[in-house]
Image (tube, rainbow, N blue to C red):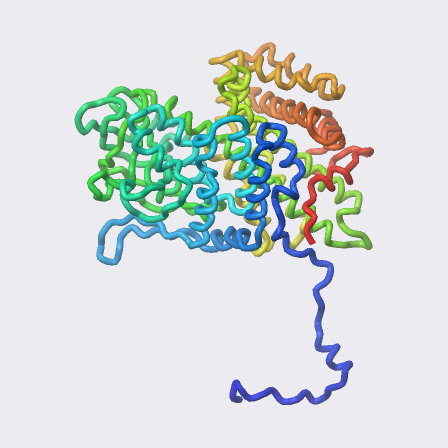
Length: 566
């Protein structure tokens, strides 16, 4: 039959037959969670930004919240994850190019991040609330798509380390902090905007970077700021299309830090070669790679033999961003689950009105708000490093928070997915991506055990950090008897930390809970603080979400956390 010929009339045009041909209509389904303002629809975020010093940024955060919640922006996240980056070792003529090809959506997301200063604003405009305002933006942007935030974080976090070498900082800092994104694969001297990556770990050592075998050979004069050639292998080179990388390698004086560009100053390709891209379960829009360094030109950053203390300046900031990113994943999971349950009905009532579902949703919301409150408090500490209490608090509470918040995220993502049900498992829903992304931050930048050991290192090197921590948590003493008992027991258990390594997870768990509870008791809605203390500080609760005790004002907690869209 000719495709243009009209179909023949049906044998019967009876109205009843037409109804029989209609198989279903779409009812009892929520509208898409899009075209909403991520700042306006997040009460806890608004309160935290104001409380921690970024009230001045309210209008800008509201503008960015609208951008992050726009349907077109959300679509970029889906497209960037559907189309994984592709590695091309050579061009069609046989020239080695080490090029990674990304979907245009990835580049658009990178552009949004850099044009809005997610990599730069606390360094270009330091002051009250600078880190807090930047964290709020990052928190919203990461909810859209988390993977591309890796090079944004590294570019942001590189500044403290690079400033250890003032001559290199003079050459690089202005281009690192430029609020623009230049995706071109060109020598950095031809670009006004650059990104910075990191290459620390090797296959024989992993977190034990002192086992690194990559060697650094001086080109001429040795020492800080001087040129070296690096020879070795890196097991993880994050975001290999960055313009330069902070790298650890063994020089004559021990493990040192180096800045290694992708191109040499003469415009020739620097001889470090990508072997392959990592095949990751999550974080797929971002490229992670293995690389061989075959005499790659690099410049020493900071004191020779002090590579770990130099690069740890960068690592501390990336750990803070892990906290932001995991908190953001929790927030988006809560937003999706509460939005779905607000619109979906079953067994005669909307899901959000059913008691058992209320118990689960409220519990998920508690976890999310506790994570945000903790993270934004550390943001204020980073803004106030000239104050000794804030410096000490940040030093101890950062590994504690990175450990706890990131570790709580995977089960949180799964539970939120279950609230949505079968549709939440489908790849056209964001929940599978949130679930796959959820373990990443717990492992990267130092896994749970590494964070616990870093907590111990802080206590041993600066015992005053523990005093600062307990001064901070004591601000909530007297607000809740359960909290007072919990805090007193925790302090008592720190009287002897001779076996801290063995007990580290238990102690660090409770440190995180104590600070979260203290912040919620002082600043959050009473229903939130009461339920948090009842379930996190008291024994007898179940291991899974949905164990809030009778008498909890779950309705108030859920209302506070639910975006009202559609």
